[in-house]
Structure formats: C-alpha cells, structure tokens
Length: 357
Ligand code: IPM
Ligand code: MG
Image 1 (tube, helix red, strand yellow):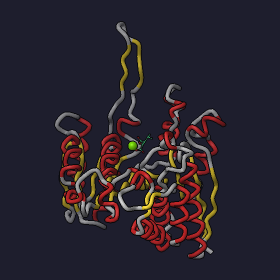
Image 2 (cartoon, helix red, strand yellow):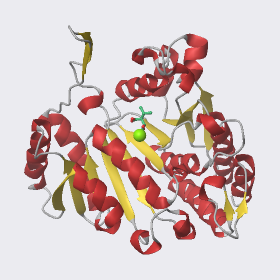
Image 3 (tube, protein in one colour):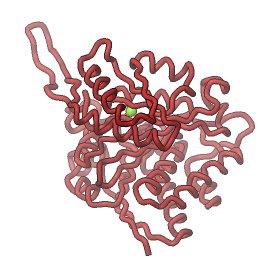
Image 4 (cartoon, helix red, strand yellow):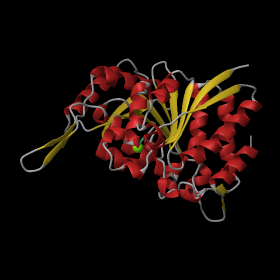
C-alpha cells in the first residue's frame, strides 16, 4: 500500500484547532482511497519557545527534512513580541524555510462562486479571478545581510539589505515560467526597478530568461501599481512573480479578493526535497480557543500537499470538492458569513466537510 510520512506543525493560536479538523479529513480521504498516512507532530513557533526555548527545535527541522511533506497551521503569539527577534515565533518559520530550501512559495487565488458576496470588492470586479502569486521565499530583504540595529550619537540606526543574485532570480523565475505554461501563459513580474538596483537586476534577469520561454507573455509592473491593479482589475493577472517582501504584501491583498484570508492555501517548494504546505493566514490569537476559526485554508493546503507533494491527485480533488459542496450548501464560518447562510464553528465546519468525503 502507498504510504506517506507527514510532519504536522500545529503551532500557535488557532493552529491546533484547524489542524485537528484537517487531520481527520486527511485520515478519511486516505482510508477511502486506500493509502496510508503516518502523522508525526512537531513543535514550532511560540509552542516550541514555551517548551524548548527556541522557535525551531533541531528535532523539528530534522523531522521535516526527512519527511515526505510538512503540513503547518500557523505560528505567532503576541506574548513573544518583546523578546529578541532571533527567538520569536516568526524566526522559527523563516529558519524552517531556509533549512528546507523552500525558495518557491505558491499562493493560488481563485474566486469561489459561492463566496462572491463575502469579498469587500464588488462582484463584477472579482468574478472569474484565478491567479497565482509565485513568491521568492528564501532571499531578498528577509534574509539579506548586513542587518541589525546600532547605537548612534543621537539614538539608534536600524538596517536591512534587499539583495538577490542572478542565480536566485533565475531559479524562482523558472518555477513561474513552468507554472505559467500550465495556465494562461502570462506572467507579470513585480518590482521597483524605477528606484532599486536589486529590482533592476530582477527585471534584467527575468527578461533575459523569457527569451527561452517564447510561448509565455511576460510583463513587468512596479509594486505600487501592482498593488493598485490587484484591486482595480485583478482579472488581468495570471501568474504574479514577486520577490519575498513584495509577495508577502501582495498575497495578503490578493487574499481579500476571495473574501477572507481564511480561505487561502499555499505551498512552499524546494528543488527536490519535501514541500511545506500552510495556510496564508496567521495564528489569529484573538480568536484562538473560541471555535471561530475557518479551517478551509488549511484543508485546501492539505489538498495542495496531496497533489503537489504526495502525487495523490484524486485525494486532493476529493478535499477540494468537499469544500465546494459545503460552501454551496450555505455553511460558513464567521469570517465568510453572509445573509441567509448557516454559521458554524470550526469543529462543526469540520464535521460538515467530513460528511462529504
Ligand atoms: C507569510 C507570513 C510570514 C512572512 C511571517 C509569519 C514570517 O506573513 O507567510 O506570509 O512574512 O513570510
Ligand atoms: Mg504574510
């Protein structure tokens, strides 16, 4: 029987609640399609700081590196906002991305027709939106050196470095060209080449690479304009190719096209190691433990894991379909609630999803 070893990282805030729902669905779908999933839970983020003193214990990284796929919920806890940055929950996630070489972050944004009224944008603007943000994930200003804070005569100075090598740019661009080939063959690369040297190199490299992909239509857009176009006319985009920081910002913005950030899954991939699959949203500490969380982004991340990470395409489709069906039946968590729908808690949403498998 086919078997896969999955490391589960429930993390902080609403993480454990949405993980529980997702795990049950994965168990049900694997049973239905006759393959085995072995789950190993590990610590990350605030949860790990609490019991091990660091946000990414060595053991967690080792397990993730030797797994078939990693499924994470969310990290982050305001209790740790005041401690040094290197040992905050977010640093654990960044070290995990670095330690697994997850340079390519894929964030699909597709409007679910049943939720068209849940968005703060008009239906005629978002109707039919189907785009993918391909975000570089292990470079740029997130990891660039030098960085730090120093004392000056009058106070302090802090600095980070936004840097990319031509190889790093080529590597992420290749991923997006390949993805574009499976879609509408259009890439819009986002930069700030009118101001930043690092963006000029980004633009030059991607233009050069595009000569090898003559079937793909490449355009370039400045980040400020892209942020505006994304809410003005999001249907113009197919693949949005971005650096680490710009992709962080645009993917939250793009999430709102779908009505709630509680709907968006993501995959983070390396060249040939296991991938990390996680919702785009954070740990939502304000609603943790209240059974209000929307588990759908994590369920859809699990579907991406099945499809991309484990090549269990049929199982992935079952999960996607059960999300569609439950939404079509009018069930909603509070973040996507609209008139004449039935509001459910996280667990009850899990039950409804389970019924559809
Ligand atoms: C994301 C998150 C992370 C990021 C944080 C939690 C470090 O916002 O995955 O988009 O900035 O990459
Ligand atoms: Mg983000």
